[in-house]
Length: 248
Image (cartoon, rainbow, N blue to C red):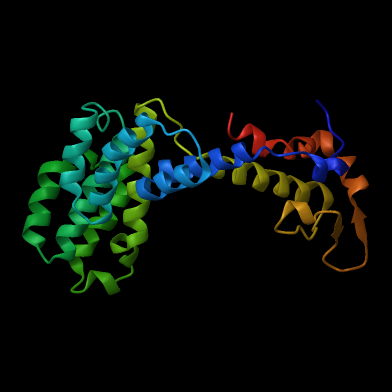
């Protein structure tokens, strides 16, 4: 059904759809206790598969975040023996993270031995530059204050933990991204297209505030009716349904 963009405020959103989006985010990120509390408070149907899935993934995620990479690899292989072999990028990230953790602990000899044994297959191709950065950490007395400090950051650990988590989900034929992430991606694309089509327009953070779109120079206000003229190109008409589509 085609809806006039001016009527977006009147599009009804099912509360259950919103709950599904929130729950998918909690389950995806292994927040088991919070997910169970949310299910209990909202009266949603409890899924046994949901709890089992989290119980399998959460220890792996936790070990990566704690820097215990070899244990995370062991648990991943137990869960899906061929997963890392078919996801070389994720496997490389895990191996280099373990190398970084050895450097962090001042075990440079152990780091070199590990690199010679496990990282040799990655000494060419697209992984070479990252590998060189990791090896360069050995040159610094205090790697955490070096130009390569980001390799030792919690953000770096989390990015690898997230990538491994997505790989495990895909292997289990589950979505690799949450409905909430997809919804934000859809909205971001629409906003970018609006900028491209209408020039430098001030876009409010909340789509529900978009009745008038004042230009940055303050000289003019673009009415929503004018925005709707571009809807066929921008996909603006679909914006009202992104919340619904993201849970399908």
